[in-house]
Length: 270
Image (cartoon, rainbow, N blue to C red):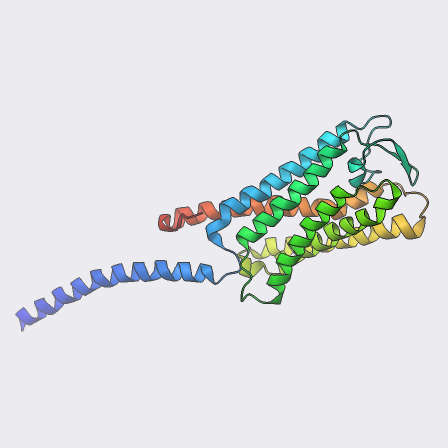
């Protein structure tokens, strides 16, 4: 009986080692399958993050450079629109504001590049097939945001015949971009976001949409012949949440990628 017990014990030990190996393989495969079922493709964290962070840098540099070149009078971040920086010469009077951007091409190129980079990041990162209506709409809205930037850059607000087309582009930027930001928060659990960050995105998107609607009221309903004071500040409350979202998502993707590498080196595919 003692001999049999030892053989059984040895067999149990051997099976235990095998089970551990099998369990490790099973858990690794299961982890990959679980990640493939999510809305976000974690294998593409890093390239998507690079695209988003590059989009932020491109926009901020383009805006800063174009604004610095605006002289006599100096460009005002509080009283002038962002789009004013994309209007080339000669100088025109737009609703009481003298508009002339010597480096309009820089701002317009920044618009286009920002839109392209954000779309690239979304295509890399989002896996919408089988993920429901909201997930599909999120990708569509991001594409609409990029399309709006292209239209706004291609048709500056002056001369007058271009303004309706520019308004379409600006509306796509603000509405599609901010609603996409809101949906990022709404889909936060499926994107792997912490609850506080998902709620922050929802707040940013809501603030952006409300600010854009207020801009339309101030610029067209209150007094359509002149722009009210601080209209630039109000517009930036609609525009800057989009840039903030790109920045935060880019950083969060890099942090998540580093965490995955530390937790399981075999999954360091990002």
